[in-house]
Length: 102
Image (tube, rainbow, N blue to C red):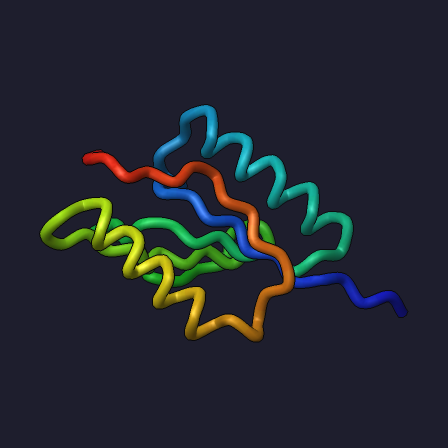
């Protein structure tokens, strides 16, 4: 049995928000999941949505939090999550690196 690398897709905004990058991220995650890859998406925390859930076989982590300076808090929470999970993922795909205000 072939072992596929674990992938994490990082995007500042994701479900329920759906723009161009979000649609592309959703399409790619669905395609990779159907091919047998384990796929996770890391995105911003949204009030009223769970911090972690599985949608169509893709684990969604809503862990990116904003406090103080937007770009700094974005980068710190992103790097902290990746550091804590550094042995879990083999491939990272980043949909936008925003260093401005939302």
